Length: 291
Image 1 (spheres, rainbow, N blue to C red):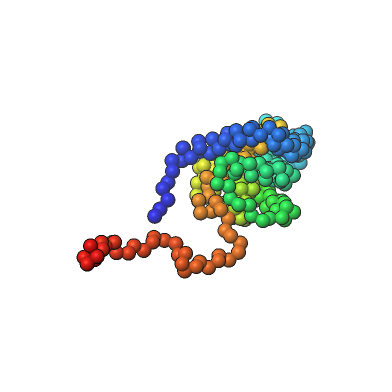
Image 2: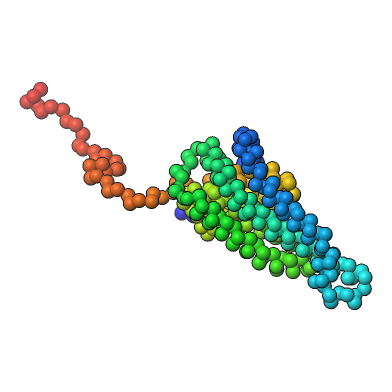
């Protein structure tokens, strides 16, 4: 039987709603919310400092990257270097948002795992926790985040070059960048909920996301834009992590909500065989000689 196709617009709006639902959950626990903003505050200071340093030196950087334009007319030279500067800044934002998310999740791993657990308990039917040592889980999270940052950096190169195409570079490319950035961000934010279900590979997350892309993008694109705004990201991040857990519950089939048992399944007793109870023949009255 084929899976029914949802309404893309409704799915996208539903994805946006998941972010607000996550905000509602964390706001009900002010103490946890207060703790949850500490890691993004630290990483925000680091990344804002790096971005400001880039902007202060972007003129020298674009001059160094365009020596071929030194002999051009002033208007053409300025246009090329301004376009290059804008493209560099946009590429830096894409990489920084994905890196910001990965680094913040790594710094606040126990806190965000607690937020994910709180969301699961509040929504009910929480899966039993899978045994996963803290150091091993944190190491895996950092390794996967570095891989996602590397992929983002590689994809940024063609997006950066396409930004110089007239009209397309100013219209289509920003949209593609937001879609890609939201997608990569969501892969990061789904990590805690998938780990809890024993689904620890990035491939597991991508597979589930691919079954409902519009729901994922409805959640991921607003997260991407909000987390790209310095210091607003500090407030948004706990809501985004809670939203990631809610989204995971929507993406995973019911059969995958509970992780498989680690040990062998014990054999059933023949006398406890499940299923319908065999029906005997209908009861008869007493024999005629007993009446």
